[in-house]
Amino acid sequence: MIELCSILAELIRCLAGYTRIIPGILLALLLVLQPTVSFAQSAQAAQDGPVVPDRAALEEAQAFFYNGEYDRSAALTQTLLQSEPGNLSLYELRTSALLFQIKRLIGDPADKDKALKQCDRCAALIEAFQRDTASGRVQAHSQLKANPNDDNAQFMLGKLDLNHVWLYLGTLGRRTGWNEYWEARHSLDAVLERNPQHMRARLARAWIDYIVDTRMNWGTRWILGGGNKKKALATMQEAAATAGDPYVSAEARFALWDVQVREKNMAAALVTAQGLSVDYPRNAELTRFIALHAPALRSK
Image (tube, rainbow, N blue to C red):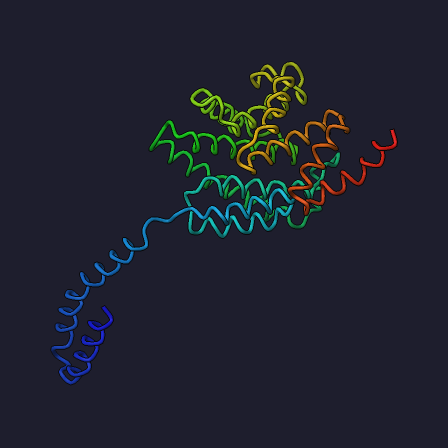
């Protein structure tokens, strides 16, 4: 291909004096060259092969996330999405990282609107969250259209919906996300109907059961399809004790730690946090929790 281009360039130089016939010659050369270029590009594309998900980079982004380095996780997943725009795991992890960045900045104040107005970075983070959640949901719906029984696409759709609900209803205190809530619930139920042992779907569904049962009044629980705290806790404990993918295990153990704190079972929460800190020693929240509660519990 390089030799052909050199020959053509030399031919054009030699014909430079023939101004009236050059346009026709150039057109003919272009028509001859175009199939050659296309063939070369096609051959290179075939040699390169399809884009293969970068598992090592995804694991690095997951490690950042569970070490509490949400900004680094969000930045890396954004970069990876440029070459893997159909990878739903990247959308799910990136929106989760953005959600936790916003949650960390706002905290849990009585006046969430006031806290949001005082947060300089939150507007840009929320905009990025909205954009990537929407893009991820479009990708998930497209993959489900191609294969309605795609468990991964179905689960990721439900998880992206839940991230939307957790941000707006939980972190921001906005009463919105009705459609996303039901799409999440139906998506997770569909996955579990096909694959009852899908651990991440079981865990996400357990979160719904726990929050609906513990945070909603009776009437709202009924409208939202009901919850079951006892079942949720049992599922989280089982998931946390199940060996397998380290990041699925991390998700389950962090969930268990969260609900143990919510249930004010600090002795159990301390044990869970200490175990997590071995695997994720850079997580500052785990370090602070252990430093705060370990001395108090030892003195009892």
